[in-house]
Length: 162
Length: 183
Image (tube, rainbow over all chains, first blue to last red; front, top):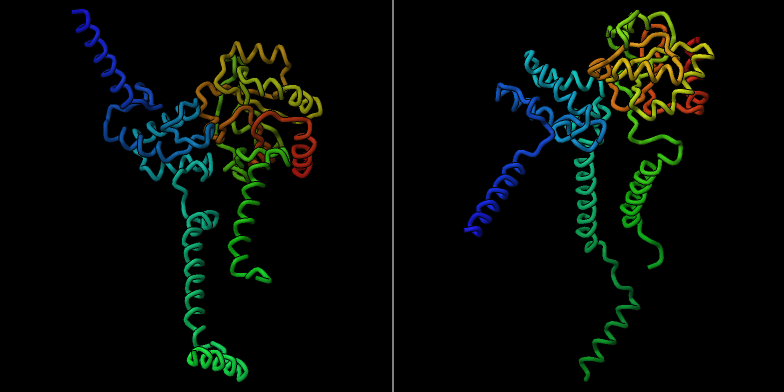
């Protein structure tokens, strides 16, 4: 009987741990909006805003005080009818483009966005040059000099004589 | 095998320069005492945000954005619970003694704790606004405490310093800037 009881307690603990694991996040219950649609937008926006205290986490993931304040600001503005773009603009106006985990395309980020394409194009040009050279080379082979021809013939004759 | 071909050197040169760039950024902390994670304010050369904060203990005037017009000043965001704020406080006292106008924003503090801090260490602030919930500080783009802003006569933010101000910061950055602003 006691073994059964222990097993049941074990299963219960496991179930609680699994359930807790699936809802682990920085967002605290009191922050969550009643409107599920707005809350989903809030989560999506928060996931794209950098927490400047930790700098490598989004405010959705971070437990920092400032991240919590910003999550509340995001939700407050959503409730007031702001669009997603307006909210990103509001935060970026205060904290700079660095706060946007999905940086905008502008003069300062051209290297960031254009870099991979640039490296690809440079690589492509390199490959093209490489193959073109290899293709041209057979036509450019230097013919044997008279002396070399004589040597070659001598070697061939030697072989046939044997 | 005499010379190394340029076609081989080219990628190597790119790799070496990339490593150099990363190394410089990585060790910049040590070189100029500049912390890489210190961000420039998004509000540089822009008007300071509009705000109207109550006084820390409910008596007298607080601190509002109107006070920033027509005067070169510093705005310091601090809290009694923030150890670096305590560390930089003597520098603020010195600036105030030397005639620099400093306004304070008391960040998420209780009036009693803020008042006790100033009683103990001195009050360098011309006036202080209490930002109980940190909302005004978000408008200033504050992310670390203390932070100090230099405001010009038009009420525009000219400089932001994250973290405690040292004597070197004052002589190297703050005084030269204040002088150029006609303080």
